[in-house]
Length: 187
Image: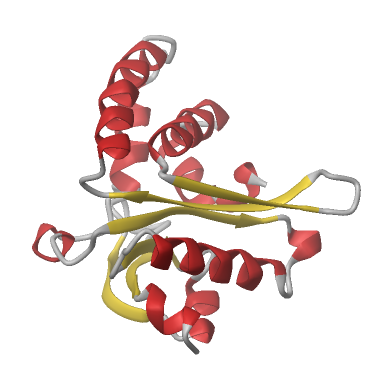
């Protein structure tokens, strides 16, 4: 699922699957909540997660991840590609980052299970976020994946820009959305 969803960075940086796995490890390490949807056989068909800013768990995981990230990066020969890979996913301008108290780091659903699974995961995440007293969740995406999904749900778009991909050939629009959990739970 991961390789199919994150095509933007692979195309623009030639960084390959190892960067996907490093990025996934980072997401798993820093997430406060991670929800997994499975099929009848118990195989994962989608997952969603968020990290709650300023929580003790988030701070500890962030420090831990910086160490793990350093070690993993030693395994990559093309470190410039890895830096470029991360730049592609640096969406939000600094002047809006203070608006949020959490970030939805990942939402991936297997293509064979789309048509309800993503919405179910998103709504479950909103319920968990409400229990954690989260007011606003930042969601970053690009026009290669979830933009229409978030618009259909009614999530508020707060930013639109161009991906930092080093060239005009593969330029993608990037978006930052703001989800207010209590609005989804109470609707």
